[in-house]
Amino acid sequence: MRPDAVRRVLDAELTAARDRRGAAPHVLDVGAGSGVLAVSLAADGCAVTVVEPSPNALATLHRRAVEAGVADRITAVQSDSDALADVATPGGVDLVLAHGLLEVVDDPGTTLAALAGAVAPGGALSVVVANRFAAVLHRAVAGRLVDARRLLDDPAGTLRAPGETLLRRFDTDGLTALLTDADLVVEVLQGQGVVSDLVGGSVLEANPDALAELEAAAARVPPLRDIATRLHALARR
Image (cartoon, rainbow, N blue to C red; front, top):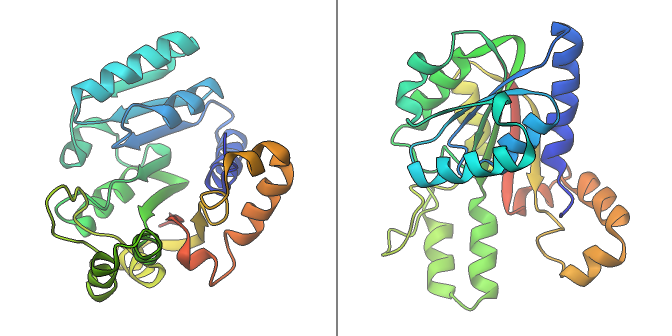
């Protein structure tokens, strides 16, 4: 497994939630996909509610949860972010996850407001989004220069081309402004995959501890943070 600065932040947040509640933290994972993170958090003792529109992804999630022996700690709901009010108790969730969600929803501002409404006092919202500038660099390195220029020129960071699945990508300024407009205070703004997405598997296998430390250090240092594959923010009301 590649080193992950995001998981370090989440683990610290969940430790604080356990201390605050004196019980298992409640996590809401919206757009959880096949549940890799949800199952991992459940294995760490969290009570996890998953909201995911894809029945195939939920089937995979269920299989993973059963294999890991944590199916009783995960509640899966087939829905999208529009139904959060019917899924989560307002102000009742210690950690809300929106990883890979804001790129594909119709209105990120409305979605953020709904997500923030589920956060308990003292809790937090974790957002991971695709980075527009990283997408520019990756396409340039791959020789897709026209696509790279389009991504650079488009503030929303979308190609509007056949097969393009993302409605938008973000940079650090745009993500910060979106969270601030939702009356959230950004406490952490870092990159994910700053270094680890650039090195080969042989480097990871040769010295994973050193790579993990480098990734953690680079994750919050501009301009390295600003060209990471993904951007991660942890915010509170």
